[in-house]
Length: 512
Image (cartoon, rainbow, N blue to C red; front, side, top):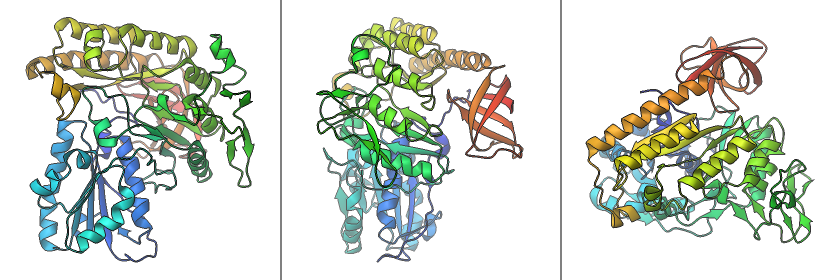
């Protein structure tokens, strides 16, 4: 199968089970070693950075070898069944370490912890601590409880927690790309998804803290940030935003996109630390388009990406903001899930086929060079052959640059599991997935081939996986580009690469 992986993939397989190592701070737990592994989406890896920061302040040391650890945490995912099975298998591997060190604390964090709760303590006798995504501040207390001989659980969901005041420790970072969480939770209630139940209700993070974090990253040498949220387009801070007058008239926004609120416009100033900040409009609000612009204005050399958008919420205002700023990448991940309106209604996606096509048309009209990726689920409950063909025809219409493609897997506790029979045979699901993958391979390759002969601005991320004689980095459209190492440029710098050929997943060229 063709490798269609990109950096902000829902599940980056190259990072599954990744362990971290940090510098040590002096505190009461000096000498106690922490081992933490992460599975699942980019949000989970971002959460592990928050956990690391909390425990680093408690004086923990980190190790990349769980056999010498005093505390083992595994940060989990519940989106797909195989992710849960992988975690359970990994827990069994920790059993030997527990036998050798009876005082070892083993904890399960994240979405799987929230969903299964005390079931973990009953079924996995190895597990001492179960902690949900909103309870990481309580980890030091929970570990203390285990030290006193008790099992410890905190899976309470919060309507306020965003961890805005915690500066994440960047795990195994290349010092160039960073994820920045802008919101937590989800209100969409898609019938196939467990996220609203495991991560709670949607809440946005204070924009000032986001700008401060992104500015700090830039000052430390990072050159690309990806703003993370389950549904970034619904980001909202403060009073309801009024659209820019130009946008309310259906026009573009060449003269700026900052939300007006009672005659006051969001503006930027400089505080004593040199950070860009919001103006003093007391009742000003910030929507996602505003936030994008605020981050883009930190510095033109800071690339801005975001994930994930929702078709019901992505606005022309967001698209015009992308168009306005060269450092906001021309790449949008817009999950379709299905091309059939009846299936979309059963999925509770709150848009139909025509609405999705309208948003695609808007992207093509406002940002003609924008790359688009998507998620596709085959074999959802009661999906007919006609419904499957609608998905294939949607792929023909959009011609996605990338796609993340899955067979439907019923997740316990979801609305679909309660309402609908999982009635499509696995063999049919697999065949439909095979057809979807084949079609996406065709378009992924043709989209890359169309860029042969063009010059792409590339942020160098490091050596290519295959050779230290080549650098690799991503284009504005999020395509991987490989080119020879040179003396005049290095990772963290931008170069212009003339593309002279492509493989099925990579552009290859030379610096010009």
